[in-house]
Structure formats: structure tokens, C-alpha cells
Amino acid sequence: MKTWKVLYLLMVMILLTRGEGQLMENFYSSTCPNVEAIVQQAVATKFSQTFVTIPSTLRLFFHDCFVEGCDASVLIASPNNDAEKDAPDNLSLAGDGFDTVIKAKQAVEAQCPGVVSCADVLTIAARDVVVLAGGSPFAVELGRRDGLVSKASRVSGNLPEPNFDLKTLNTMFAKHNLSQLDMIALSGAHTVGFSHCNRFANRIYSFSTSSPVDPTLDPNYAQQLMQSCPQNVDPSIAINIDPVTPRTFDNTYFQNLVGGKGLFTSDQVLFTDPASQPTVNDFASNPSVFNGAFITAMRKLGRVGVKTRNKGEIRLDCTRFNS
Image (cartoon, rainbow, N blue to C red; front, side, top):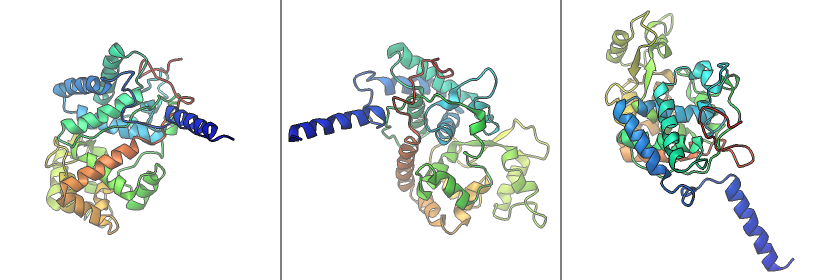
């Protein structure tokens, strides 16, 4: 075969690959060049109404990517309450996160109808809330398509639980090509998170027969948790995961772990396990190191289970499949 034919075929293959599955930072440069500015404005407007926009949008992105991949399947609303968002592990997802993405998508549709996926809008919004809370800005890769499957039955066993140990965390994250370093960095998002009391009550009331309180908890912090979450507390009550700077995206979460102030077992184990403790110490003392690792991990997370042209769609309404 002549050289020019070989080169031509290679070029065709590269272009097909890019069109089918490769994410790019400038994916919408010709079709919707202002998409990031449009989403940013919508997110900022929502943030001006409630701080919950920050943790709820970030958590929504994580929960979406870990089940069917980053394909906005978590946004689908089912009349039968059997979609991904209806699974027990997703019932605590705050409505403000959904509202943020839906409104951002509507703003994008008004200027670029049928072009930008809900999955990409969620990805941009997740980056934007980090920046709004004081985190470092970073470029996001785009080009995802929206998934065609959203089932509550496919959620169980695919999201981290608050009682996980290091090995279990690493195993789950490794399924998505995320390393221990990525997992620890992404855990740092808890610096702006909140939790309902039942997710950690066992650590302060029924840890073991010999010690009702988890001995890895700082005693003063344990007392604070008991005051905020007394037994038989209203199940709707939620508290900040980071008790020091709950509204700032920073490395204080890791400093809290060093001081025995990790809210979940899966938080505190990052410091108590010798295999992960050096990374926690590093992040606790070097905010720039944490920020760099977090950005790398977020970009890797955004590549999980990305749908190609043949497997997805550009949803017009994020809560409904096109057909």
C-alpha cells in the first residue's frame, strides 16, 4: 500500500477516535464556545442563593461517575421511582445539586440547543463550585455524551460507605483507574461536605462493647458530635464534615484527620492506616500539593465510563431520556 494511503487511513482512524471517545478541553470551541461561561454564571447565581450548591454539586458529580460512568444518569427522574437517584445510597443527594445542573443546562440550551451534554454541564459545574469555594481553578475535558441507562438497582455496592477501611476504598477506586493517591485527594472534597447523623452515629454511641466511642476520635470532637447529634436526633439534621473551615475548599480536612477529627471511619482511616498516613501528612502541611493532586484526580474521575457517540445521546432535558 502506498505511503499516502497509509497516512490517510491513519488520519481517518485518529479523527474517528476523537469523535467517538476522546475528551478534549476545547471540544465545544466551534459549536458552543461560551459554554463554560454560561455554566459558570448559572452556578454562581445558584451559589448566591445557597451555599449547599457547593457540596451538593460536587457530590452529585462523584455519585454519577461511580455508578454508570460520568454520563448524567443520576439526573434522570423516573415516574416509578426506580432510577439511579432513587437508590437508597442516593436519597441523601441534596436537591440543590440537581437544581444547579438543570438550570445550567437550560441556560446552555438557550444559546446552544442540542449541542452540550448534561454530563459535560455537570462536569463543568463540579469544577466551578470548587473554585467558588476557594479551590484552585483548572481546565476540564469535555465531549461526554449522556447515558441511556439509569436504574436504582445498579447503585448498590458501587459507592464508598462511611465504614470502609483503606483496602476496601482502594479496591473500589481502582475499578475506575483511580489510585490510592487519587482516592485520598478526592476525599479532600469533604472539606466542604456535610452528613446526616446516622452516617457516623456508631462512632459515638455504639462503636464496640468495650468502647462506645471510637478511640481514634479526638475526645473533645466526640463530645461536639454528641451535642450536635444526640441519640434519637431528627434524621434530617446534618452537620459539617469539616468543623473548622466548612465553607472553604482547603486542606483543613487533612489537618483534621491528623488531629483525630475525621467524621467517618473512612475519613479517619486515611490517617490511622500507615499505608496512607504519609499522604495525609503531606496534604495537611502542603496545600499546593493537595490542590495539584485533587485537580489530577478530578480530571481522571471525569474520564470514568465516558460514553461515545454510539452509546449515548445529547439529552435535551437532563431529567429525561430523549426517547
